[in-house]
Image (cartoon, rainbow, N blue to C red):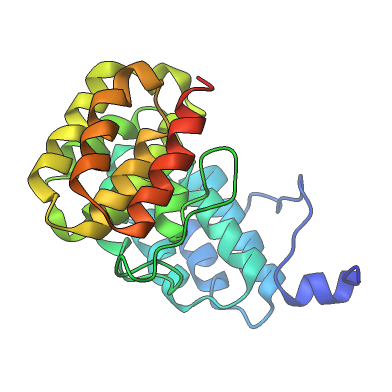
Length: 236
């Protein structure tokens, strides 16, 4: 059943193209993020993304509100605002990868292979947002995979970004990420996500590594993901 306009508004839905008069200051928009009306919070997030996301401190405020926000469309507006950010925004987002949302897989026992025939949407909302940023974010994420506590979520976002930005689908980028697979291969969840990440690249780059993973790991989730990934890789 199609939602009514009121139902959509109650969830923070804001039509494309709607903006405020641009007269509100950044601090006024920060205050508006706490408004009791979800649509007003969505409008504040949109304005902050359009006008202030590159100002130091804006991303941090949006992230703190993302932790608390319950309404679907307002959450999406916050994420769209963050996706317009720069390198400093990426750095601000990394510590939130494991703390915002509860849909992320936490162990290999939870992992389920996507039925999608393309790169699956990251389950974590911050990883998904990183995956919607500009190509510049890839180098930052590749460098920061060294932060092991965030690496599994980070490689999901990096893979989604890479899949949607063909210029990132280079052998050099794959080899850089592969170095972290070698470093973290005792973490089965990271291995599984690395296989998914591999589906963002041509099979000529990934074949040796995927073959090795297939020999080394008998876990059902990894074996099933290998089958899906090989099919996607071969479409490049």
